[in-house]
Length: 420
Image 1: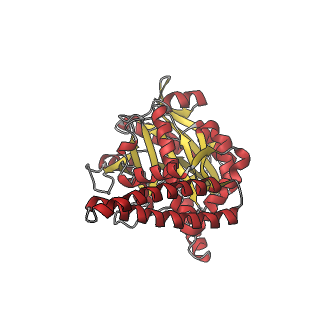
Image 2 (image 1 turned 120 degrees about the horizontal axis):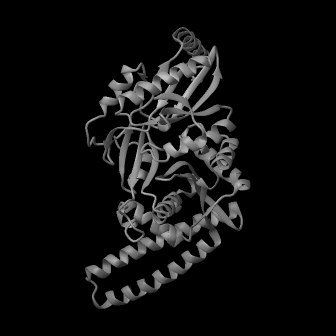
């Protein structure tokens, strides 16, 4: 058994069979990281000629040396102590020869499973902590909230037993209602091409400013498009406002006709509870439609003729899961419920193509009813995976101490803004 660099074919052959495979450990991610300035190689452990562990290893120059990173991996049987030991020994020597200071890994391993509301369903996976610690890895403290790295908490939906006929039945009431409304509104979904990515960037920029997080630059989305090809889907939801207004007018005329019949019926049976309830319901709907028309006319005057972009999202298509990675929504169009239609469309895509797992990706890990992103994802039903988090392996202790001290001082000079 020995540690070695792998060819792409060797890596793919092992990685695609691993239960831990994820989009961060793929040839597409290698291309993306290289476009962003990283040096990337495939490494692993072979038992004679058979690959028993593999990883996409990225490195970048930092002060005093190099930083190495394995995001979403490595891929191995983490119950096999011999393999983990051989990989660790090998990669430590490999990085040391290349003037590396330290390595981080973020294994795609669930620490504990929770239900959709955050209740713990099983015992935590403490055995991996003990094993990795034995080989010199140190665990970064568990974090909640969104940070600029792979999320610790993800919301997942199992699609393996669902069909096109039963998929929407699995949603919560809010999602079913919202998807139904988008269809009544006439909202459509389409995929953006490379030249249209600035439209996606405007969406994410608007959302980032509103929610106060750092957006990716346009060049990042362009790099994702080129690196992942057909496996990256930039989807947008849009509406033709004039058609929408025309349809609302038709709905109003239909409601007025029904209200007239109810009014006539109440002349003969003025105390009919059923008719009185319907009268109130339809009257409320009329008021809602009137307001929607006024809003739509304002939007139409503002945006002009043609289709108006409401929301967008980036999805990565994997062998075993679809990942909902980034999204943006224009706040003024929130009452069109467009994000629900985007998710519904991609959930149907997954079922159609026999992809058994839908990963809504990151949530902040707080379960007190204050996370609006979690609430949105909960409406589609699913469960939460709390990942095991990040570990680091110090290769050069002296340089590592000096580097961390330098970074701490620099962060303070920058007002607490973390540097790499």
